[in-house]
Length: 546
Image (cartoon, rainbow, N blue to C red; front, top):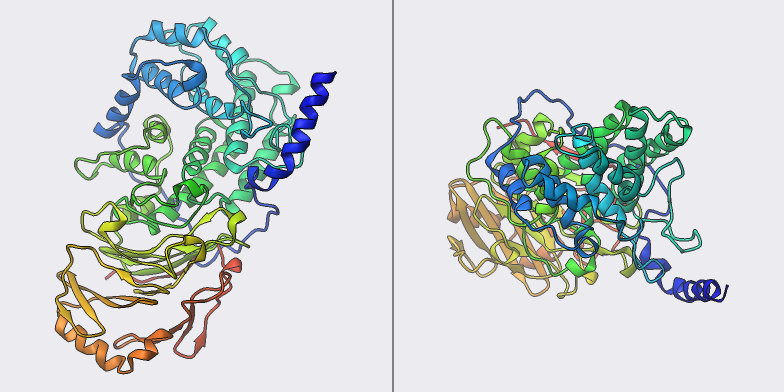
């Protein structure tokens, strides 16, 4: 009794300090308009079943020692088990190891009141082992399978755990935890039902779990991920969805596939040759990351692309092996158009991706061989959004922020930035343009520099301490481009608020705009919709291929 009261008091004292931070879930589901750009779903490509890269990923995991379950059971051990079973390596030792383990914790977010949380990470890794090998007695002993089902897979039934454990029901758990926890519960139930257990407890239709899960997936589809582009959590959201797409009922498979298609299409328009640098929600600990391939999504994208019949040569993966192993067994494949756009942009485009109220948009202007990516905006400390510099990605071999042209401001603190200033082929920010050290101008004046980076692509730069302006122009002639810039913008002071595109429209902007407003104000005399909290899921324009 005394111990119970002490535990309750400890939670009561701790909870007020963590309630605003433990939960980073959407407070209210508000569906966004879909916008005028549809997510591709058509599939006709005949994909390969394996590749050199997927074999490398499996070998990476299979050759790892099976470490201590308590310390490595969250991520490493389940993946090593899966890889060994898939490759048929050390099967007896692998099955004996699995048979000797006990649950090391419990599901849900970890916090001082739930110090042994995160067991749902383990469950998500055990699900494919059960569904891929549960019926194969040559791979899993029946006794091992029963131990997996009845001991290690700790949750079943029809009541979802919606809140962080031991928070008195006040703190909703996060998207990635809900998908891993409830997806694993659902798929354990489904296994038992498909293998003869007709108890209502395990019937996902009767117990209501399938209805809840479909509703939750639909919330994500219609409002987008709250933890958008999260480092590291997006990877675990994607793997949980892949479990459902592989092993769920027809309805659940279809729902999960639609969300996966949507997230992969977002990746395709927001990246260039496996590099991207978008804003993201969670974690602030990654705000200083400068790798252009540091997001977790690439851990799936590269292995998937390696399965194309006309795949690029010598694809390698640096990091994200813990996510990549899902691409080695999952039946999911990219829609045709998404795969093509990941490899190369066929035409010029301008796309805005809305993420709802109190969030940050993603904005991209790209085309064959180039991509301007807006860095977004932090909406206050509790938003947990990391704004990043606006970046210009080219076909060049650059994989770090320092190696590409970028701009941000004011100052160096991302929490003060509004780096939403991207429009068609143009970017502006309240700080100077950072130019890679190995770039040299092909034409320059007191106020402009022009860099010819490909045979027909000129990068135009105007930079001061409190204004950076970049324009990407299709031209083979830097000197002529420089002359056009001067002729179109004779009054340099006006560049603080407006830029006349040579032979194009005039755009007006406010680089010090409030954090709830798009930096771009007008195109010619037309006012733009600057309220990005209300922007659709995806809108913009995709030009006809050249």
